[in-house]
View 1 (cartoon, one colour):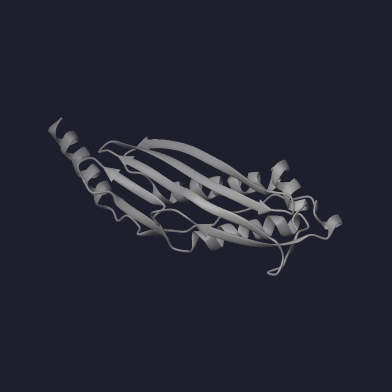
View 2 (cartoon, one colour):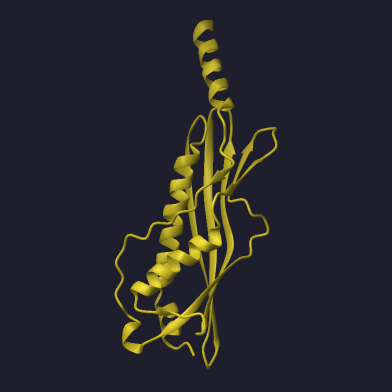
Amino acid sequence: MKKIFFSLLCLLNVASCSNTPNAIIIAPVINQQFNPIYSANNLSARIQVQDLRANRHVMQIIKENDVATLINTRNDLSNEVKNSFTQILTQQGLSINENAATINIYIDKALINVQQSLLDYQASNEMVIRIALNNTKKKFIKTFRMHGKSNGPLKADIAVLERNFNQELSKLITQICNDNEVQQYIKNLS
């Protein structure tokens, strides 16, 4: 029994000593095809993305009685979000023009919070993105949220959490672009 316990303890020690990456890659993948809803109106807009998060890390791993490990992105979150919006809106028939009316996108929150214990982990993702549009009549602002949870035995797999985060970010961006109110306001941009 002592040998089994000692072997388990060694295994846990090795698992906890493995290196945690200092950055993850943000790479939302948009696989869906979108209808060209803006082409008939010959619309153009400029996309501007601002990251308004107070802290720049996207993941924090909190272990019992230890300092949190903060993990940043290897690439710029704002640029990846802008590229994804540009990809979808272009498929929807919107021309991207730096001299046109602006679609403002604000990243208010993008965080993976991992509670790591000796035997298991619990992770939660939260993303909050706002979109603001101005037309000749009024200003439109709408907030979109995405939440996700996962858990498992032993140590959290950073690659799995990264993949889940990117999938949820892709879903959130797609949801925003497919939102009826957002589409109506884009059609009325001045």
